[in-house]
Length: 342
Image 1: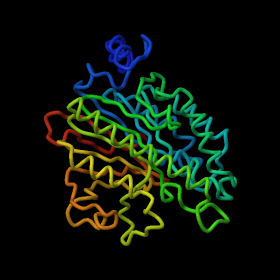
Image 2: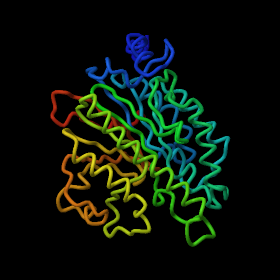
Image 3: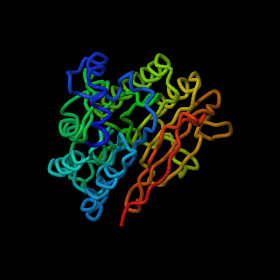
Image 4: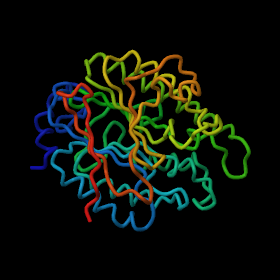
């Protein structure tokens, strides 16, 4: 029996009571399972980019499936490169690939699959129409993950944001938060010098939902006495390549960074932010003392318990990130980059 099924069979009855799902539906947030040992999850993002990676993506999935330690998978968005067509057929192809994952898959959208689709090279779409298409393709069953063995998660579907979800595993509280590059989608669309009214309205509504999700996630972590909090996003809000951050490129992230800083500072354990977007592996403390991001975002005091990890991505990606919950380690998480099989 597949590894997840072993866990799921023991969870079914409690899951139905805990989150109101029907018997036979496993849950990623079952309190009885919240302190499970030997729990690992895979993190990928900014993949597949281009024809070669698209063709090889099933092999990447099979490699992750073969790792018996891995119990869940997180894709941090950008399921295509930034200069290819944003077609329904392509979305359907990636959805079929996602359905190949044996473990539950949590996916948060990236800018390449909707925000940047106004570009002529992407098909000159209205990005908001593409966002609707992304939600219809990948979030057709709100409150459930993707993958061959989906599990229940708490979602903001009732507020119109089915992609925003939270759950607890192995004593760690997780949230996938829909935050994208291109200044969180405020970068002007082709032919415009400023965001449109509808563009601003979308960003305002989604940002408010993101802030609520982050607050709810930390509240859940406090209630469940979680050992750590993990936030999963596409956008790199602390890009190391931005030596002099421009408000036009990062300003829209300010309310989100504010709430992360506030909530992390009040949390008793480590807080982890996993993101893609800048494509090169990095691990740092973006709001530690001396960071330029403190003044840029107006954060009044350092937040030393916040650690950010950027996953490798784009055309040069050759590994996936394996993250393990280790309750013997005060930092709770440890991780390694696993090379793609050749």
